[in-house]
Image (tube, rainbow, N blue to C red):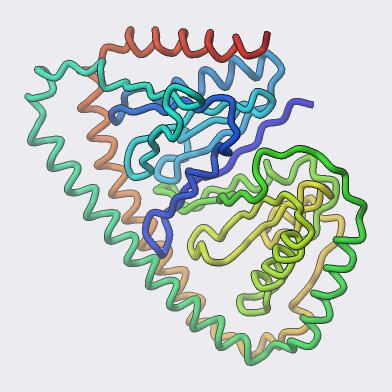
Length: 353
């Protein structure tokens, strides 16, 4: 069955730009094409074009979206062919590990008219500097939001009956791992990604696309500090002990925290994401063990305000990136980019035979 999944390989977080781009493709890949180039140079359009063509050929595709522009693509994976294409430019620099073997570098900057570009030198440098400042401001707000989140967490823990939470954890572990394993081959033994992101347009969430088709979904409901991420970490450890291939989806603001876990060999997902309510076969309500009168609403409001300020700063960064894209576009020979695109598609489809 053809499937389309969408996720983020990186995020705008309390730790700055956080990258899982090395988790887009596994080390045993058939081919990884690494695109280098310029803003507005056609990297995302190239990947979208090839993804659309291989979907028509009957192959499943993963779209790895850019957290700074969720309409743009940082990478695609053609699942059945074990082939990927990625944007290898900063801030998620990717270089070939096995050049000439499984990895191929494609430099689209060869199609820039450098003489024409010189006329825009000052404009480009200014936009780059303003872009850096805006991101720095956004990351500072996300870092402050994390501190407030920790304050909320410590306060809420006072109102949690952890004996009850531990009992629920044990029952869930027993239930999850009672399911019979179906041995299948997976590219990754352990894969880390984001299913959502803080973007200039606000919060973007593709969790629904990773939940579709999962045989069993458990939804964890609970306030901050009730132990959702800790429970998920327990399930991760149990999966590792059993040698099960897993996908781990991290919190988009505080990446140390876990939001979703897919255990592939038993086709189970455990998630605290809101989309879990739509697909859940069973809900684990940790709020049963929480006395909500302990909540400090002002702390929650402060957290949300800091996230909004961070998002506003991301929007400012996006404006500067758009300046860069508009500056580069007139000096790019897109006929050359299109030629590369068609050659690349032909090369990929040759793997079908």
